[in-house]
Each structure stands twice: as structure tokens, then as C-alpha cells.
Image (cartoon, rainbow, N blue to C red; front, side, top):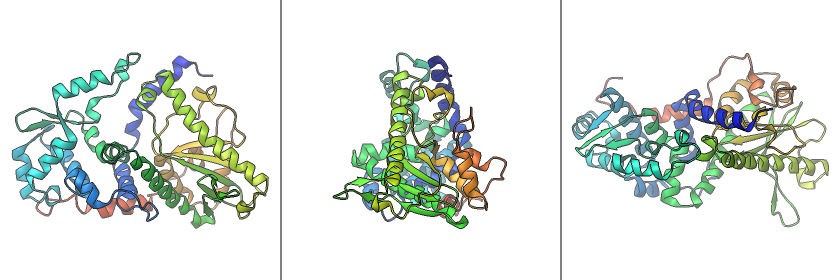
Amino acid sequence: MGTPEMTRMIARLMYQQGVFGYSAFENISRSIGLLVEHDAGACDLPSPAEWKDVLGVTLTDYMTIVFQLGSLATTYGGRLTLDTIRECRKLGFFAGADPETVLGVIRNHLAAPLRTLAVDGRRDELAEAKMWSYNPLMGHPLIDDGRNGYLLPIHRYLIEKITPLGLFFTGLTAFGDTFPVELGKSFELYIGQQLALLERVGAVIHPEIVYGRHGGMKTVDYFVVLDEVVVLVEVKLFKATAPARAGVTAGLEALVHKVQRARRQIDKTAALLRAGTPELADIPTDRPLRGLVVTSEPLHSIDTFLYEDMFEPNEIESSTASAHDIERIFPILAEQADAGDRLFAALTSNAPTPPSLNRAVTGLPAVKNPISDALWRRWETQLVPPGSIR
């Protein structure tokens, strides 16, 4: 069993280093799938006009501008100047936005003077984990030098502004508490598209079922039905908070509590199936049940021995997977005739190893995700200005 001290230290290391295990391209593609080319069911997300009111440009143009600013800063030694922006605008950069508009995006959403960053850093510093506290450059990755120039100390922080996590905070600030609710709905629908890749191998995907006397109760978000197993999928738009990433005990406990609630929903739905709840009649009950909690951001090592003593027992064996995992694993499974057997085995404990979705594709070659790839390819046409060299 992991000690509390070990759990705290591993959490700090994983949340600091884990980001390097994922490509910016998959994050950006997901941003497009969630907020631009989203499912029609997410009908209450901000409109293009509402995004433009907040950003000064459309959301897609904002993403293009930020991405290109990152590329230019890398080219020019981590520094951007007004002259550079003007010259690159002549070459067709920044989705057609004029230099003043680009500067407006920088000043309003990306940059802050050093003194402001210092104040923000002290304000958000965790007394028990100073070294692992929030870095204010994550909110304002460009440093305004006060001379029409901007410094970019950490390139990744600028690109993260156009990932789902970065846009979550932009949207929350601009649109208030309704934004996470609508983004959560869009994320749930997006994961449904990813799960549907398994239809190639005979899976039947059922969405959330409403039940009860007045139709006010809901099951898990998805049922993935295969001959060998029924997987109960609960989708959650949540992430590790700053205290959790810093290994603060209260933050880790809050993280476990969120996953625990999702696991309880899986157990509750399993009980409905066993009880023969009429609304769930289309879900077979003659095969094993397994659970899958899907989170919008990675929760590193959450299913391992490090957190085992922090969880309450659950009836249905379940694994926790992030959107990254789903995007990587399901295209591979969609090409396997034994996908059902693989899923069942992966989501079943093999002591001392807990259930792990990743085991379903161990030893198999990577496969491009057709959904993510198509989203990226449609957006990348904006990234190469007509006046530049591809």
C-alpha cells in the first residue's frame, strides 16, 4: 500500500511531468470538437458572435492567432514585437486580423507585466507546497516588457490557452457558471462519438436512459454493449485542481471523492439492471458488467495502490480513463475482432493489477483517430498563411 507521503510526492511528479505525454495536436483537435464543430445537442454553448464579443475575433481565429504566435515566438528566440507582428501580418498570418486586433488579443487574454504575475503567484501560493504551486504564467503566458514587446518563457503555456482546459477558464470567466455545464454536455456527446467507433466490431452504444415515475432519474451516460461484456460509462468534465496537482492531501481527497461519485453511479445503474427496471429493457443482463469513468483531463495513477485506501469499495469493477486515453485506445480496439474479450479482460482486476483500459491494447500498433484527425485537418488549413512557405 502507498503511504500518504508517497501518494503526495507521486502526484506532484505526475502532474508536473505527465503533460509531456500528450500532443498539443490532440488537445487542440478536441477543443474544436467540443466548442467549434460540436454535436448539435450542445445547443447552448456560446455562439460564434458571443465568442467574438469576448475575444475580439472568432474562436477559430483566436486559436489560429495563439498557435501562430507560439510558432513565431519560437522562431524569434522567445520574443514577440510589434514589428514582427506587422511583418507577419503582411504574409497572411493571424487569420486576416490586423495588427491592432492581434495586439488586443495579446493584451486582453495572453499577457501581463511581470509585477502582476508576481502578485498573482504570491496570491495563489500554497503554503504547504510552495514549489508545486500554480504558475501564473499558465494564465498569462506572455510577459509584457513595457516596450511593445512580449517574452514567452514557456511555450507550452501559450498553446495550452487553446486546449479544452485553457478554454474552460476563458469561457468560465467570460460566460459564468453556465459555461461548464454546457461544455460538460458537449464533452459527453464527444465521448459518445468516440465510443461509437466500436460499432465497427459489433458494439451497440446506448445513451443515457431516463427512468422513474416522473422521468427524473438518469442512468450512466452510455452503455457499450458487446457479446462478451456490457461497459457502463460515466463521463465527467473534471480535472485535478491546483491543490491536488501539488499533492496537498485535501486536494487529493476531493479528487477521489469525485471519482467515487462516478463509480457510485455505475453501481446504481448496475442495480437497476439487476432489478429489471423496465426503461432499461434494451440493455442485456446475461453477460458481465464493467465500469468506465471518463474524465476530461488525466487523473494520474488514480486507480493504483497509491489511492486504494482512499476509495470506498465498489461493486462493479471500474477503470478511470481520460479523453486522451479514449481517443488513443478506441480506434485501436475498433480494428480488433476480439475487442469485447479485450475490454472485459482490461476492465477486470488481475491481482495485484487493478482494472486498466490501457491493457485492452497492450502490444497492438497505434491507429490514427479518425475523428481527431479530421478535426485537425480541417482547422490546419488556416495555419499556413498563403504568403509563407509550407
